Image (cartoon, rainbow, N blue to C red):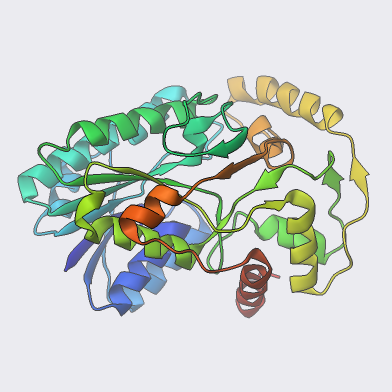
Length: 329
């Protein structure tokens, strides 16, 4: 098969592209290198035989070229963590960029289209067990625009075989998002904010790649929405303990109250935003310590045969090993 991965220079996209390459697919990676990690992913993918197109999904001409002669599109490109850009940027990338990819895929005769979304669309609705039918209440521009992107993708189902996946917190070799947490615990400078009893349901990146590939191959996935999460529900305390074990550090014992950090985050957002500066602390970062949610993956198990296997304890060991091999820890 010939596969296009948008956002392919990012963490998830690069791991998906590598799996496709190793399985014998021809892979075209569409993405940008906005930081050192993406530059390294770009070089790795090129060395493995991927075709690279450096452009934004907002560029219609580049998108048209990218979808040419492609069988499967995995659309993972998104504006996500940027806190120093206007809201229009999120609309341009997450909504209009998605429209560009969908329309170009129709013209190119793409056989399957998997749209990568996020659990961020649940927003303030994230409380207790969540599934595909849980009402959505996105509470930031990222979540709002990703929800619109989902709706747009599914509206094309009569013209294009589309599936949508909502991706849970993802970690594993190649991830830099949790690197700060691993480093802080390794250096014994991490402390818990709040009780640490809020719940997470992370997914190991290779399990996620399995789910994405199934979404592109199973016939009954077309027109469906799937939540992809790991099989294990853990608290922030358990997560920190597993990482401490993985890096050979002592368990995290010191904790601080939530409210001072939340107030500082709100203040920094208000002060930094007018100047286009990324605040060092913001509310979305605090969600790690305060939001509690877990998922039902029954639909993905039933319709896709999705079976995530990796425990966080073992996954943290593999991730720590990768960090050390690459001199990051």
